[in-house]
Length: 374
Image (cartoon, rainbow, N blue to C red; front, side, top):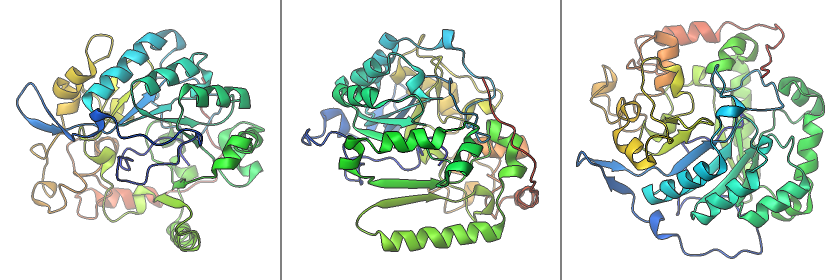
C-alpha cells in the first residue's frame, strides 16, 4: 500500500463505509451536513460538495519509502498548523459538506497533539480515519484516539514479508511494529473490513525510483489475477480495492474523482490543494487556510478552478464520451510526462503522448532505492 487515501474511492453514506473502530458506539443518523451533495458558490455556479478531506498533519516520518508521495519540498515542523487551526478547519469542512477526514502525513503519530486533533474532527461530526505507518503509535495512544472519537485506522504495509517490507520502508523493525499494533485486542475484535492493494504512483520522490519500482507487464497480469482470486475467495467477508499501475492501464483513473469536485487536501503548513500532488504543477496559485476560509478556497481558489469541468480540455478529451467519467485523467501526471497540465493523461491509449508511457514502463533497473530522509 502507498499509505495515502485514494480520493477516487470516497466512502459516503450508502457506500460500504469502513467498520467503526469503536464497537461500543452505536451508529447514529447521518449528520445534517452529510445530506446535500451540492453547494451554490458566489459565482452562482453549482459545484459538487467535497466528500473527503485529506489532512496532512505533518511531513515528518520515521520511514524512508522510495515511493513517498509527499512533495519534494517538505513543510518544516515550525510551519505546521497548530491544534486550534486544525479544529477550525474541520468545522469549516463540515459546514462545506465534507463527510470524512483522513488524518495523514508523513506520520501523523509524530504530532503530540494527535489525540486533540482527532477529538476536534470528531466534534465537528466528521468520520475520522487515521492513515499511519504504525511506527510511533502505541497501544496507549490507540486507546486514547478511540476515546477521542477515532472511527477507523488504515495501516500502510509495504509487503507481506517482514524483510522485504523493512527494506522498502528503509526502517529495520517497521513490519514488527505494524504487526504489534494490529495485534492489539481492539484490532483483533474488529478484523479488517477493507484492504487496498495499491501500486506506486509516480509523483514526487517516486520519480527518483521509477525504474527500480516499475513492474513488468507479466508481473502486473499475475498480480491482477491474484487479486481477482482473493476477491472471489473472500467475497462477503472483506472488500478488496486494487489500484493497478497507471503505466499499464488502458484508460486513466478519474483522479480525485474530478479536479475540485469531490475532495480537497490541506498541507501541514495550511495550503489547500485539489490533490496531494498538485504542487508539482508549476504556475498554480494555492490559497492557505491561514488567510481564507475553506468555503472561500473551494469556491474561488484559482488552483481549484483551473481544471474544473471540461472547458479546459483539449482533444481527444474534449469530445470523448468518457470525459465525465475520468475527467481527462491525472493533471499532475500529464504535467510530469508532457510539461502541459492541460494535456490528455498519457496513460490513456488515445493520448497523443501515450507512446511515452510505454517507453518509460520498459525502463527497469535493479539499482538500490534512493530512500527519503528528512
